[in-house]
Image 1 (cartoon, rainbow, N blue to C red):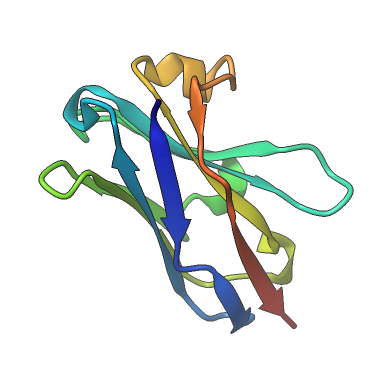
Image 2 (tube, one colour; image 1 turned 180 degrees about the vertical axis):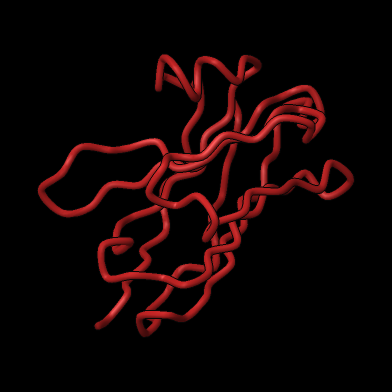
Length: 124
C-alpha cells in the first residue's frame, strides 16, 4: 500500500514562506506523477499543483501561480511544495497525492493515493 507522509506545515505570517515535503514509499516513485491538494474549513478539497514523473510538466491552480513551486527529487522519493508570498486565504490542510497518470491528478482530481495532510495557517 502506497504511503505518503507530509511535513513542513505550520503557522506563518502573511507574506512569509513555507516548504512542504511529501515522502513517498511502497511505490515506484520515479514513475508516478505527484500532486498537492488543499482543503480549507468549510470548503471542498481543491487541486493546487502537480508534477509529472520526470518533472518535465508542472500544473498549478491559477490562485498560486507565481507564488508556489512544485518540485521532486526522485533519488529521495520526495516531492516538495515551495510556498512564497503566502496569504491568509492559503490557510488549509495540504494533502500530497500520487498517481501513475498526471491527468488523474490535474483533470479528474481523483489520484489513487493520498497522504494524511499537514496544516498550513497564514495569519494576517
